[in-house]
Image (cartoon, rainbow over all chains, first blue to last red; front, side):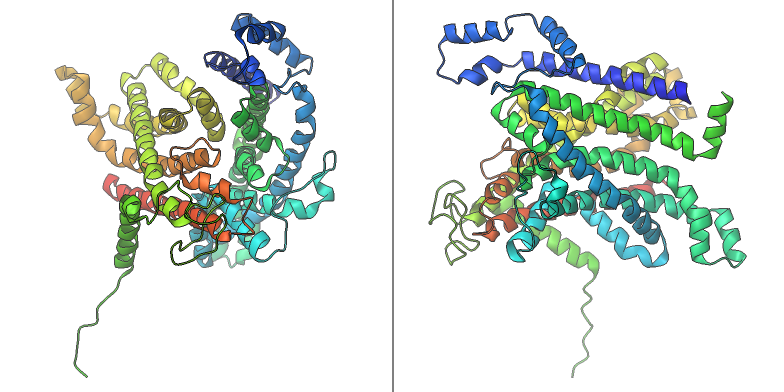
Length: 313
Length: 270
């Protein structure tokens, strides 16, 4: 078990390393760089060369990558085009994005399990039809629609998530509601569909039929046979959804101006602030791979057959 | 009261009519639009009127005209991207399945797996930093789609590759094109087609997202219209509602269509 976890983490770390190298080399192939982005189009070539030298951009790309990597190991993610240290720019925002994702996941887990199992029963057709419709709608369209209904028409909630710098989003719950609802709609539609198909299989299995024929109530069947069978799949689905929320959150945060890393990523891409983009890709890619590794382990832990084999090996 | 045969309006008729109307709107939208997509025709945030049925946006441009102009580029780019993604992925999957060597399979599929681990929105952003153009957008969607198609095609083709008629064709000394085109592809075409439908759904999603990020394919992209309308949504809700409904309807339509292809192809594949 521990060896497996170690192997997964090592693979993940290797992939993150590869991803960061790709981003660096890819960015190097572009016409512009941090020096031209900082000075603007009217800078003289001498001035650009001077800044480039000061920033170390005249070094070969692999040397710079090595410097960046050793900086990351010391907790220093480099300097933004605006001159601020990237670590400082990220520190508040990572927390805000984690709060957003965590609140969404806390709501998502019970809701998707309940709705997914319900959708597999006879009365569940509307739920699965709704999930099928919703699953394809882009998250920013859902977010825009929610803003239109709850912020513009009903005026119940703010359309822009104003959270003062340094405050936790949890102290401004009204700013959190619409972003969480948007992400929840995206996550729910996918996870309900996945959990439903697992539950349909579970409902059709011989031991469920046996329980039914013995007169066990539907509630009892669900508790004793369906939920345990669905759970390994569900955990996998929740973790993958959680990772998807990190990606989907990028655009939802932008819609509501929520001060998280997604909003920062979009702004940085638009202004060409490459050091920030590189750091954010590292953070997002790392989160994704960590969640996938955890999902892999969770499946082993929750499936008795795989669990005993892992112990025996 | 004369006996007349009741005209039966089935779900199918309704679906066909709505779908046909939507396709016609997309195709001929630019011709139907009363104004140009980029010229201001009224004061900013003007409410709906006879000349501008859905009002104007933050620069005074007609919302309806922008919407009509923006649909076709969005759909065409998504189609092109989904097609290249499906073809590239299917080629990779077929190569891995037909060579039947672990080395080739690893060399082809492992790099694709690594790409599949990156969230599509990140793939999109990274590609568009490097190539901020329509070609870059198609490349981004291809990169996001190909790994999944390759997996699906590989799984389907691997089951066919070992069958007797393929073995016989190999023994006859048929070339690659024959093997793929005559022996394998006809048996897995349904699966590949169904997968391509799903790639189109995600292509619509990504292309609209690129517009939302201001990196889109046209100056009246629906995604761009949404992001433009957000700050003034309280003043002119129509400017936000129209593109939101457009994106949602397109995505849902594409999804239902691909779902239908999946169901039909299951019947074909048996």
